[in-house]
Amino acid sequence: MLKELVDFMARALVDNPDKVRVSEVGGEQTSVIELRVAKEDLGKVIGKQGRTARAMRTILSAASTKIRKRAVLEIIE
Image (cartoon, rainbow, N blue to C red; front, side, top):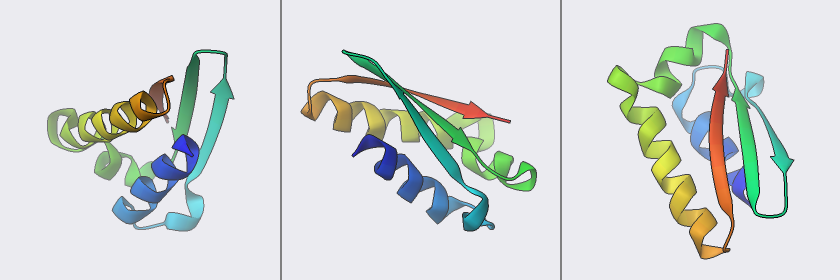
C-alpha cells in the first residue's frame, strides 16, 4: 500500500512517469521505500529547499501510522 502511494505521488509530479521506479525493503516494524526517477525529474521530486520531498514524507508517515508501521522515504539519484 505504501509503495503504491509513493508511486502515485511521484508519477503525478514528473515529466517522465514511465521512468519512476519504487522499491520497498521491508522489515518487521520499518519499511524503507526507495524512489528512483529520471535525472531531469529529480528537482521536481525534491522541490525548492526540499519542500516537495518533505511533503511526500509527511503523507507517507501519516499513511504508515494508520497501518501501525514506520516508513522511510529514500530518494535515490
